[in-house]
Image (tube, rainbow, N blue to C red; front, side, top):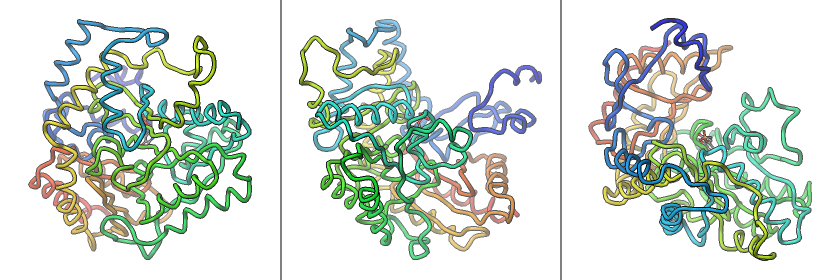
Length: 437
Ligand SMILES: Cc1ncc(COP(=O)(O)O)c(C=O)c1O
């Protein structure tokens, strides 16, 4: 491949010069595996980027996309619509917990977060409580890369270049990771529900009447799989209720079966007021996101004169017909193959498999829930992320795709994974750890 052929594409979240000196290219994918440019099979330990829950190369989705593109290639969503958008919203609302009955379509997780934050602010204004303008996020939260999500998020590297451009009036809860008493916990950690009291502290500091919403990932994926301690999310919900604050769950990773329930809200038994999703909504095949709003939130907008737009927000590609077709076909697969239930059934096996890496070289913590896992490595002193990137490269050479963040290996295989494939994945990772300095 000519050097010039690699120049134009500026890769996201990638060291471009290093990558282009030694590129990794996929040319095909089927089931659990990618095919590389040089014809090797690489097992997908990360569902793409937490997207491909039903595995790769699903003809049912491809056919639905093709059919939709021929039937109705594009329809504006401003003042117009098409039947599949309503069908999909209705199916999604039925899948969602409680009364999250209203769906606003976006094109990505980041757009879903911006949409949720804007709905939260506009909701309070619509109720005549427009002084509620503060947003509370969480340290090490990842809520996408746009200005709102970056501001409520808590990933230092993502924030530091934009310090002057952060949304005003944002504050953060502490994250829930790293309590010594929780290390190597299998499943949800016992300790740390008290961290939710940070929200009370911020209410005392700012006064609750200034706070519009709290946004958290029920389980934080991108920062390295940070689990909510038992009781933590319940306590957040209680504090929000006490003070009239909206609770937003960012379910861009946990949505669509990852924990063995449709959404993490159902898994944890905690009801948010707004929920953001994307990624696996179309099995990763077409960009799409969906924001769910409760009856209370939605209905607050439906009060003024009926000819006036209630929410000045939307995207050219909101409810794109091809994306809707991909999402409907994905939901069909999830249902007919029982993939959410499958994730729940496999979770104990996955848990034992990943925890078998305890005691291997460099491993300082292991975390898991549903079909998600993290192996947290001791960094090389003075050289953070170097060790985990070596693990990533060696694993890739051995035919295993991992995801890394900080010095953490994050794992989330497609929900179609077989037990024998889990065994191979964990054996391969163990071997890679052993041979990595
Ligand atoms: C919790 C969460 N929110 C938002 C996003 C952003 O999604 P996207 O990359 O589709 O914009 C991500 C991406 O990983 C995420 O994990």
